[in-house]
Image 1 (cartoon, helix red, strand yellow):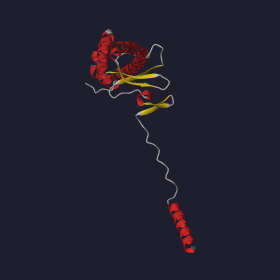
Image 2 (image 1 turned 180 degrees about the vertical axis):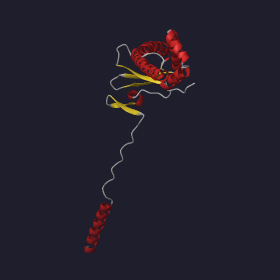
Image 3 (image 1 turned 180 degrees about the horizontal axis):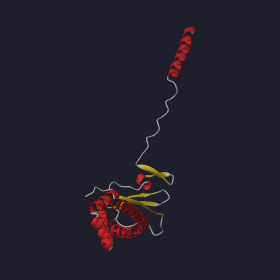
Image 4 (image 1 turned 90 degrees about the vertical axis):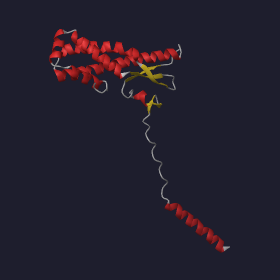
Length: 200
């Protein structure tokens, strides 16, 4: 009986010793960050909801709250908001393109270029926004609908080239400067760079 108790005690001590050798319990590794998701309204959403971008295109987000008129009307409202955001993005891109182009070529003074930039961005928005498409849709738990609206970059580059050249021709002095400085290649390069497309 004594041997049996001693054996049990010894086994218990050995078990405790082995448990102690294991050290502290391993801390679970943090979950890997999911770059396909982002947080919006306290819940996981597709990454484009936070950063509207699409490879080789111009993108924007439109959103609309739940509407008594139904989901079709809600989508139309979200698309309209997305197109407004696209128009603002186009304006920024055109202004950047003109700024870089005029710095490189020295064509036109600041006031003339600003006026030209404003007119061109409006015309390009009018021409290209009709071709915008929905590339993604996500509905939050509160019913808000988000849509990813994108433009075909190739069509936008071509529309930008045509519109800029037409606008330059409408100002005789600017057109003469443009031709004298052989600035067409510089213009094409700046448009392609700003729109994220290879120069042609």
